[in-house]
Image 1 (cartoon, rainbow, N blue to C red):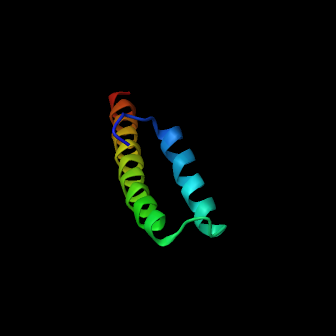
Image 2 (image 1 turned 90 degrees about the vertical axis):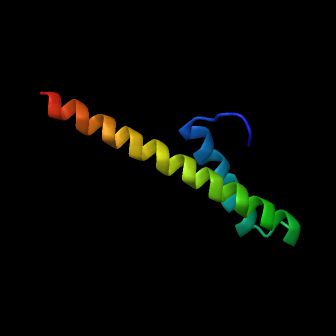
Length: 63
C-alpha cells in the first residue's frame, strides 16, 4: 500500500479484507498482514473524512 489511493478504493479494500475474514479465507500469517493493512486503510479514511468535514465547515462559514 505504498501508492496513494482515494477514499473509495480504500473502502473497497477494507470491504474485501472483511469479506475474506468472514469467509475464513486467511491463514494466521495473512490475517496479521491484512489486519495491519486494514489499520492503515482505516487511518487513511478517517483522515480524509476529517479533512472533508473541515473543508465543508469552512465553506459554510464563508456564507
